[in-house]
Structures are given as C-alpha cells and as structure tokens.
Image (cartoon, rainbow, N blue to C red; front, side, top):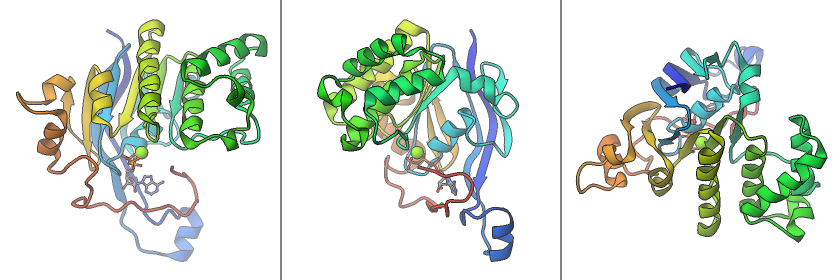
Length: 281
Ligand SMILES: Nc1ncnc2c1ncn2[C@@H]1O[C@H](COP(=O)(O)OP(=O)(O)OP(=O)(O)O)[C@@H](O)[C@H]1O
Ligand SMILES: [Mg+2]
C-alpha cells in the first residue's frame, strides 16, 4: 500500500496580531501564539478519500494549506508521496490541486477562458483543454450561456463549481478539497460529490477532504479524522467512529464535548490577520 499523505506530529501556531518581522517589533503588541495544529498525525493511503471534520477554527484549512505547500509547519513533518512539503514543494505542486473557498479567478473572463488559461499553465494546449473544460463544467451543471459570461456575474455557488472544475482539469494525483461544497445548493452539492467519487474511482486519485458536513463525510470518505482545537481526537472509518445506535453527529459530540459548529466553548479566538504575510480565507 502506497502512502499518499504522511503527517507526523505536525504543529502550527499563528501570531494572532497577524504582524510579522519589523512591523511586529515596532508595534510591540504583546501576543500569545494561537496553536492551530497540535501534534497532528495521520496517514492517507493512495486512492483513499480521507475526511477531516471539525468546527470553525479547528485547524482544517491550516492542515490543507500545509499539505498544499502554502504554509510551512513549525514542527513535525508532512510528506506527499514521500516528498517533504518544505524541501520538495515544487514536486508536490505538480501532483496536487486544491479547492478552497478563497479560489481566485480573472473576474472579467468567463469560466471557459479562465479554465483554458489554467490548463495552459499545466502545459495542456487549448485544443485539448477546451473540450475537456466544457465536459467537466457540463458534468457540474454549467453549460450554455454561463460558459461565456464573466465570472464576476456568476453566483458564489456557481463560482465555487468553476473552482472545483479547475482542480479536476489536470487530473491531479492528490486533491486537497477544503470545503468544496460549502455554499452550494443540495443539487449542486450532489453533483460535486458524485464528481469527487468518480474522479477517485476512474483516475486513481487520492482525496483529502476538509468539511463540516457530516453527511458528506459519511457518504464519501473511506476513513476520517475528527479535528478539535488543533488536535485529532479520533480516526477511523465513519462506521467505526459511531458507537452502535449513534449517528456520526452524536459521535462528534461525544468525542469533542460540543456540537459541530458550536464553537462557544472553544478557547481560541478567530483572529483576523492584518494582511501581512500569509493570508487566510
Ligand atoms: N494567518 C493566520 N493568522 C492568525 N491566525 C490564524 C491564521 N490562519 C489561521 N489562524 C487561526 O488558526 C486556527 C485554525 O484556523 P483554520 O482556518 O485552520 O480553521 P478551520 O478549521 O479551517 O476553520 P473554518 O471551518 O472556519 O474554515 C484559528 O484559531 C484561526 O484563527
Ligand atoms: Mg477552513
């Protein structure tokens, strides 16, 4: 069995002021780092759909960004198909694609133009890319006039679908999906979920899926982890995490001491950074 993602004792903390370097020294605002990931260890096998479920601020996006080489860990290690995220980021970026709610596009260009452009960055010639882009968008329910309308005129849900389409365009070996269906209506959600499953089954892709949607996790994932305040509190198959007679939601409450989405008893605050250094969605 090949390991697609290997994460061992991963740690990441943020300065809640969002200030870095000289600015931080000059301003001198006293801050205590916020731990976003605490000794996180998990292994994802090749071909698996692995889910990470957690409330707002539990550390899902931080984990997704470290795996996608957009953030560096403070301690521990993260490897993608044996490549270390810090030392081999270029290799990893060639095999991986990420979907997140902060996807950016050329807003004046259409979905078709945006995706054909993205395909060129991956050396796909427009003649090959365009039919593929049309096919993927069609499968996600975007066809006809919206294909050629500027992205800025599309609803947020539609834009999210274009972001999903872009991630699948290059048939990546590893897909890191950070809440790919948040903001989608139920029918669109199902389109995207069916597509994720299909890509895994037909393209031998591995999927790391961050979500707060228990139904989505239960439906799609072979295995999952529950992340709470930066710590993994349970891992296993969705069926193994729930005790007899318990739903996955019940199991989540038992494991974390709070309902999914209820962050009132959490210690850490969601600090908005001041736009210096790493930006977050
Ligand atoms: N760039 C940053 N600067 C400061 N703090 C940050 C930064 N990024 C994340 N954090 C903090 O790290 C913790 C984990 O955040 P993260 O975005 O990973 O959570 P999440 O599980 O993705 O939440 P959500 O469900 O809302 O997307 C939070 O306390 C958050 O405020
Ligand atoms: Mg997030």
